[in-house]
Amino acid sequence: MTATAGKINLLGLTQTEMESFFESIGDKRFRAGQVMKWIHHFGVDDFDAMSNLGKALREKLKACAEIRGPEVVSQDISSDGTRKWVVRVASGSCVETVYIPQGGRGTLCVSSQAGCALDCSFCSTGKQGFNSDLTAAEIIGQVWIANKSFGTVPAKIDRAVTNVVMMGMGEPLLNFDNVVASMRIMMDDLGYGISKRKVTLSTSGVVPMIDKLGEVIDVSLALSLHAPNDALRSELVPINKKYPLDVLLPACRRYIEGLGEKRFLTIEYTLLKDVNDQPEHAEQMIALLKDFPCKINLIPFNPFPFSGYERPSNNAIRRFQDLLYKAGHNVTVRTTRGDDIDAACGQLVGQVQDRTRRSERYIAVRQLGNEAEEPRNSENRT
Image: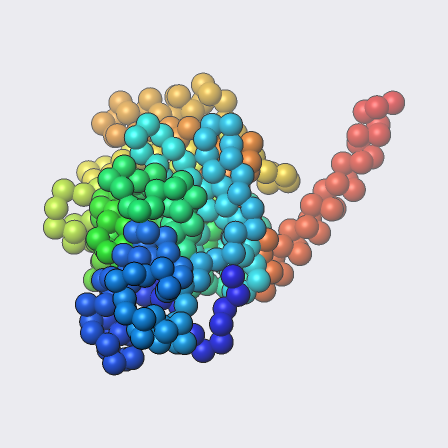
């Protein structure tokens, strides 16, 4: 659906913003609740379908506002029930959203940017470069699309989307205002009514924004750690050079302690064969996280072409997990889901109109690698 010039997209407005909008057009603030229910509970994008609004108001809304989600380019369903949507945003780029069912829980992995500026070495999203921040409407629009696709409107208690993780394409804290606004709608009873414990923001470690986040919202926090020491983490997660571990972890602790209740930090750790999966890395991690209220989520690397990394063996993964467990940590290994539709963690790429030229450089390196491989392959065949 294309944007209409001069019209306000109501999809991305929080309750407070929606109330201000209705005041601005000379109507009552309570209309905000009525319209939000139509949008988020019932999935309605047609003002004429809003039967509890008078005709005059509906006509006024049609003249100055719209309800516009991102354009769905494609939807794929994995053999394990995982779903992936590719949606086109206003910049022209495409981003990806993934739904992961597990038991009675349905987790939606939501993107916040078209591409990513941080370029973590093991993540295919980063190799796409960066184009733009998503608007609040484009972020919450991913939840809106997913809910509607499952036929869970009108809203029901057993909605398909029970958890949302800001772990899709992009670094959420680098699109702070739009991400916070969309998470407010996720948690609002007039929106999706998702518990603050079930909305999780994942960051690679933008320290000033972690502190700012704690001032405005109380969602769950996940840290993309991936290495237990600064030297290795700076190779894998370049932002570590700016915000090293002795700065980053105290910021995470401040955030968790500021929630004022028994909450914990989720540690995301992608296991890379012979890179960060050795016993000494587990021991360093144990020391690093000593007395830190956290749970550890180990993520076996999901391969993509020319990454330069491999998935560890199952024995190496179990060994790493056992060392952490014996030290008293709550540690799980994430089951790879949706890899047959390239929806697994670290595989989201979309179609990014790269402003950084990083994808161009990455392709050039891949081509050089191919040229170097061809003579060796020819020799092997003779």
